[in-house]
Length: 433
Image 1 (cartoon, rainbow, N blue to C red):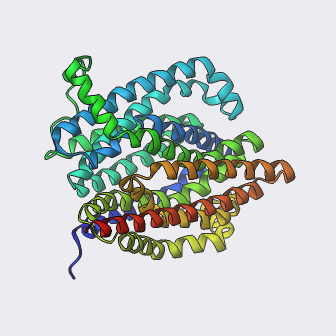
Image 2 (image 1 turned 45 degrees about the vertical axis):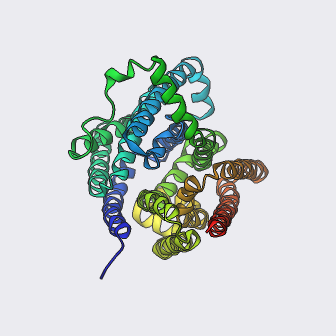
Image 3 (image 1 turned 135 degrees about the vertical axis):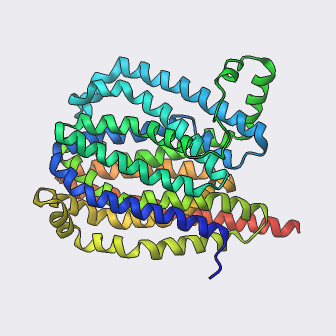
């Protein structure tokens, strides 16, 4: 049966994602028997802090590579991204030197204080990884991306199991998380011979002070400034919304509660984030092409969302109705509490999974400012809902339920906003014809 080229590319990434999920689910029960709820909760809180900082690593500029025209503009974006990433990594390192102790105390990370100084290393690795991934997405080398995803995930899981056999502390998981972006980027570089030989030539970076080069970089920055001023805050708010429950649980109820939530989110995020990322990586350039060809964008978006709705319905429904029993049976009785969190989170993360194409469409429609405002207001609402319920009855599951319900409202508003602006763009194009 004939399939559009973008669906063929999507099928490759989806197949790789299914394999990644099988590896994760096969090894996760063993991993959780090596690391208890407290150690896993400390790792979850550290990972949450890391995920909040990663969107700042290059201010969203690597994502603009797909929309850049010509080698010169793309090369300028790479230079600009690396320059910003180094500057921000140095800033985060200075902040760590000054405030690592208080931060670790507030987030119940006293055992991981020294690892806070290594966060800039992960930020630099994340920037290089994003640049390489976006470069390969633009070249449509989805097989390389899929193969790297599988191999990198397998190596990470085996490293966790090997490290956990020698030491069951959270520091093992943290160290692997910090090094994972570098390993992933190296594998992509080695396995993509048809891509340009190097993502950056370091000799040219030394010439950034030249007047001609500085003007060119400033011109490129102005052209893609929406990624800096709107896309980055939007991503920061999205990741903060994902990470806030772990940090709040660690602060209010201790690392064990954060560990139960981290496991629930790990299981639910496998289809919601990993598979959603595969869809987004293929849908993004496809939607760019549809916009350039003046195709009906609302229909393109609705078809993509409908496909994801069908794809995620069964697994999320099972976790929503039988989360307590499933977690106890798969991971052991001590992890049954994670199933209680998962039951409330399933509906929220299901609609977030379906909403993945809208997140990519926002960048093409250039409505990041509206998305950022919406994310800001709903993020404040989520945090206030959590704090209010946690302070009122002291039950962590109830606090997560309140957080999830506000998150559900946010996703519905985000989808409606994106579809509205798609229709508005179509009307504007039709009026010009």
